[in-house]
View (cartoon, helix red, strand yellow):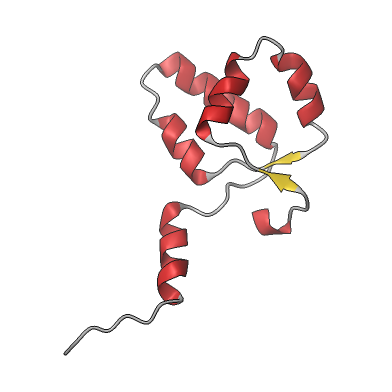
Length: 93
C-alpha cells in the first residue's frame, strides 16, 4: 500500500504532462529512480481522458515507468467514503 512507502512523492496531471514534454526526460528519469513516486488514481483518471491516443498511452507508460510497482493512492470514492465515516449524518426529523 502507498501508506507503507517512506518518503513518497506524488505528481499532479500537469506535472506528468510537463515531464513527458521535457527534452531532458532521460536524465530526469535517471534521477527519479532514487525516489518513490506514487501515481494517484485521480491523475491516472485524468490522463486516461486524454483525447490523443498516442499521447494518452505515452503518459500512462511514463506513469508506470516512474511509479515502478507502487500502487496508486486512494481513489476519489475511497476518499469520499473515509470523509463520510468521520461525519455524523442525520437522516430524519
